[in-house]
Length: 432
Ligand code: NAP
Ligand code: HSE
Image (tube, rainbow, N blue to C red; front, side):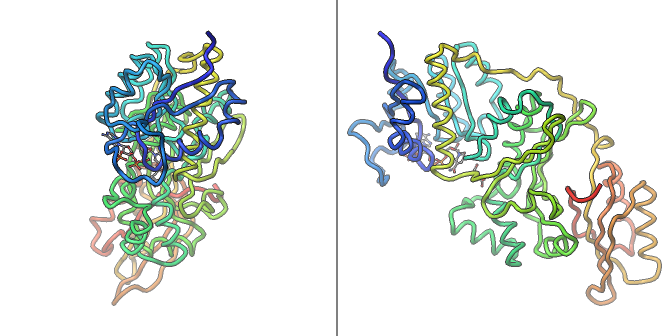
């Protein structure tokens, strides 16, 4: 008999899980018209079945026994929105071996174990989709895999962490300092009580590992992403950057040139003429440079109940369409381009620096000499008085290699007249 109903096992019923439940319930008819099948949440796996959730479910739908989902032969698709690495990974692998398709919003899991999950899916003729794992409500993974599949992408820059974008926006607009804005982000529920994954850039790094794997079609490992977070950013850095025409953003940057790639996450001065400089508050955006398409930007909510659930349910629509067509498990394109990573001599960028020096004759000449010894020239330079007998120098360089800039930083530490390099940021946008 032809299948009329697709039964879904929901793993997790927190922020995203309740959003998935609400969207499936509210958009029943639309989903049926698009897929030709009815979609129904059959069981929901949670830790605590007695918890007050502010949403009603039929009696017996909630379970705290994972076997009720993994081994229920009526369930066709698992939606994993419980998070974490274990036991989640084991549950997903079991579900795939039980021939259930999987949708997940779990960037931690996909960044670390995506290859194993995708190959298990392929071996079992199952789909795995994870659109919500990067930039919540923005359909960026589908854009890379389908919309831009005919192009060769050579650079992706992303504001892919809403919490840190909110914090940097507040520091920029209201002159708040880091600790003050972190406390506010925690009070608003954007930053968690342990904010490390967001503020130290790890969350963004996981998303950039996923983006670069799909965009460059290489198997990018998480530990190959250079990561620096925002915990040492000061309101003074932001104010000086602004005075020279830049907004400080936590940018994920994935770049390919001469078939070699580099992927990093770091606070970056973005020139105000670049569209990413105008992405504020908790919003996310991914800016893509392709050989043929030129430049495109994808902007929207990077988290939240309904935006994230929209991506999850759209994945579900794709799975159900595949079920109708009998094409499940055929869509995975494994990375097929050899991964060659750039050395520091091959990584090019412009930089913004702020340093405190002795306010005496010859200092500026000394600073200039160190940079010119490493073939780095200045685009902008400002000097102003600092506390008692010292001066502050703020400068923007032309393009240099990371290796040269690292040498310059080391050399400056050894010069007595240069007291302290307070900050050094990569710089994007503006004239070449
Ligand atoms: P959440 O609100 O903390 O909800 C987690 C749910 O999973 C809860 O219902 C919890 O059960 C259940 N759960 C967790 N561990 C479990 C375990 N060991 N056994 C049984 N149930 C367990 O999380 P969320 O914010 O919805 O996030 C879910 C996933 O989506 C994560 O991977 C996250 O990274 C990803 N994501 C979230 C967002 C967002 O905006 N929140 C955006 C993009 C991606 P109880 O309710 O009984 O405690
Ligand atoms: N902590 C993440 C953020 C949630 O702030 O963007 C979405 O992955």
